[in-house]
Image 1 (cartoon, helix red, strand yellow):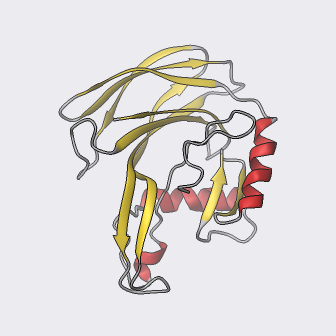
Image 2 (cartoon, rainbow, N blue to C red):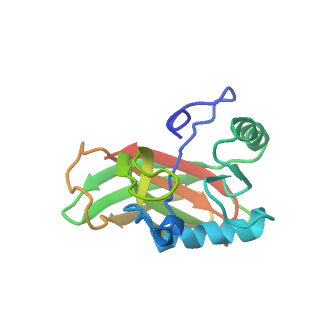
Length: 203
């Protein structure tokens, strides 16, 4: 994902990537230090909606609507072209303030969705590395980009306006600015449906 994260497409779309590490490998001889059951459950719901083959890795989901093998560049390009023709709503981070326990954020939403949307907050590491001791990648050091450390629903939007939210730091995340982390907000239909707007900022 290093090649595409935070890049713009030819249609002007900003690609905001999130690496959600699932727990699949934890039962196959190595513990993924960035894995979480929350991400595994999200993958399972996406797979039930989008994938006849079920869950697999690496699996990429684009805006909750398309899924394909994460290394399939042509599939990603097709999905981005299809997504550019769909409706998107504007989600914008207006301001933020770090606290001892997290970050207070004001965001603005513009648009009139047909149904309420959940606003999901993700705190992510810019980059991470992991040493693989067992399995097919045994002996390798893997590099990761935009690694989700926490993910939670923090608000609901029904129409245009601004809201204040608080996003708590997960355990082990540095509490200071400029430490290689960023915040992502995205507005998503219920039951892991379409993502209609997203915004990100460095911490």
